Amino acid sequence: DAKTTQPNSMESNEEEPVHLPCNHSTISGTDYIHWYRQLPSQGPEYVIHGLTSNVNNRMASLAIAEDRKSSTLILHRATLRDAAVYYCILSGLNSGGSNYKLTFGKGTLLTVNP
Amino acid sequence: DTGVSQNPRHKITKRGQNVTFRCDPISEHNRLYWYRQTLGQGPEFLTYFQNEAQLEKSRLLSDRFSAERPKGSFSTLEIQRTEQGDSAMYLCASSLRGYNEQFFGPGTRLTVL
Image (cartoon, rainbow over all chains, first blue to last red; front, side):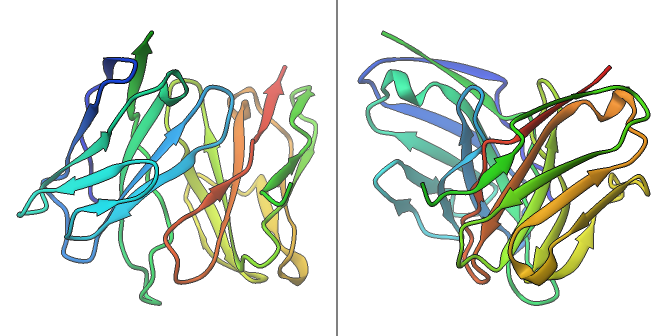
């Protein structure tokens, strides 16, 4: 499985934007970039995913570098409820042609200061 | 609540005992996954089902572990002869084939004394 590298921790202030980086220099052409987050004492929660183009949804934006070797998750206005571990994950295709297995790293612990 | 549910939420057992966990996925989801998470680490993939077929098992899933998904609905994960190293959070997730998003349950925390 292709590997991702994320900072161990980051801090942000409430209502400010947060940019969470992820490096994935060994990404293959069929790997999707997924972001999940895990709040304390909960299971992981899907945030966003993309392949080549930048993506936006109600939770966040995903900016993907042109060479796809890095990406950035953008939370436009951090709230205290965004404090969590954020995981950047590459998910490749199985023999059936669809993504399935998620390989989590240690993620980035985001602290949001009031 | 129509999300993924897991039971029990907590289980304390003595070394050598057998334990079984249950996962109820979102009703229309045909894929179901089991992951294990130890303290300070991200979840690790254990196995996944498409309908009732178990399509992949991680090498982390020793012969003491068995998972089933009869009739392609709920799933059970059994650990036989538990060891202290089995202490972890066991997470279940489900998804629709062809969709990227996996929906996770709250997990079952196992403590082996």
